[in-house]
Length: 221
Ligand code: SAH
Image (cartoon, helix red, strand yellow):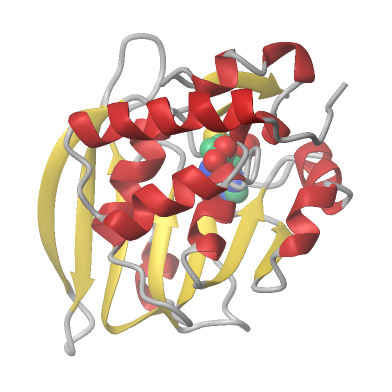
């Protein structure tokens, strides 16, 4: 069960979590403010409201996870999102990362391949708050060609390679933040930030290693 009550106790735990994420090296105040404003416990079972404010990933069903707050903050900071930018997210999952981007003022388009997760998010009351957040059921390898091009793309699952269609759907000068590498037990992926050049190619910057659930081709019913 989930409850949607944000008490002083929750706010206090959230403040401590944000301080921890800051200590770990996140300095973008707009990212930290979004983390402070969003009740992460709304995205998890109400029995887990303390766990929601620990800096760790957690299972959300369908073998998927809500990303670790530090990881969400890290990717959001690398994305350098500005208000009104069009952002495509691959891997809606719990919709926590999507909410962080929406809270920062982006126009968010997020795709999930698992029907059940998509359906659950469709009726998740908290998300109604964000008129700038649109949910899609589909295969992230395909992107959303009819809604592009995008200023930014964020992939929140381990990509075995850089999906060419996602590069195509980026504007010139646009950026993609994506963890690339093999996935599975004990595997890590390298966080990359790609910037699209006028000639259609990309410039690549490499950051830290993380461990994500795999990006899988095709939709799941
Ligand atoms: N952004 C999420 C993290 C979810 S974990 C959050 O904030 O909680 C990664 C998600 O990517 C999973 O829900 C998984 O089902 C989804 N996923 C994996 N491959 C995908 C694909 N090809 N297209 C869309 N979603 C995908």
